[in-house]
Image (cartoon, rainbow, N blue to C red; front, top):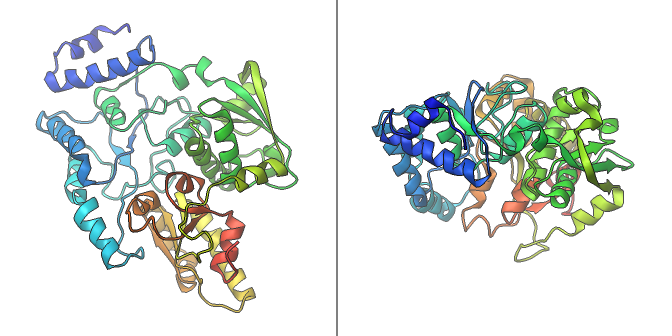
Length: 425
């Protein structure tokens, strides 16, 4: 790797031993992927993936403390992934005991470290930092140092920023020195599509299911998706962005996709068209039967596959303001049709603190609460990490949550049917 004089000086210790170690780590990371150089981070803010104060993460706290003790500040303010705990989310005595005494015992300590290091705001905890209510939306072409997979794929694909799928801690190290290794999705060549995915469904495909199918097929490669615009349009409005948020999270968790192009919709596809497709790209056709095949092959790992659901999570990644409003109307409509006033399964909708604050100012908030739905800012995945929670029959419309936990996947329509009085599908 070729370093500039300034970068070499940092590596040589001109700005202290701690910063030299951080630079050495980034150089080694770049060398592992044969990066030719380091390039400056250009985004206003960073985003960190490690938001949870797990007791076993003591090496992270030690590292953060070394950085703080050395007086090394992050070059950027940052947002961070969701908090793991919220007293409003249903949990029994033993589950709470595990959460507070054995799992997230360092949460307050770690949040204090994050605040001292450069947290944007005390409530900047969300996996959807790019939403307007949060304020960490990169510009097209910005170079980032993010690690949260659903945020990385959204920033690359929907916003046209440039970021590799980094690991936790690498994200903050890039922010501290202001550079990241130049390889992969930072390069023009690395952003070319090696798969052409043709959508040939007879109806709008479920975002989480379509993303899952593509992620499992192309894995870490870049897909160029043709035919989806007929279902979600050619404008990146709130509805399309919410769809792509959920779609992208599934591609990133069910596979390892860090960038996708949607013909006639996403910025680079609109600007460059099929020139984004690499020579020799493979083809994958998705029709109704293929989506049904993918869904039927999801494993059910509940102890009793026929158990009635005891909890429902919607919002992984966090919901948008528009999605909260849409869900409110749909739930009200189904409850009225079924002669009910409240949901029949304890249901938690998760969104960023900023989105929840904006939602609380609308008439929809009281209506959703009246329907019995709980809103929360937590990360459902962190909740399900509790060994007593993972034993519960939990349902979700998140393919990310399904992939990483024991939660069982249902489409939005199936979730709506189940929580408003219908039998479990």
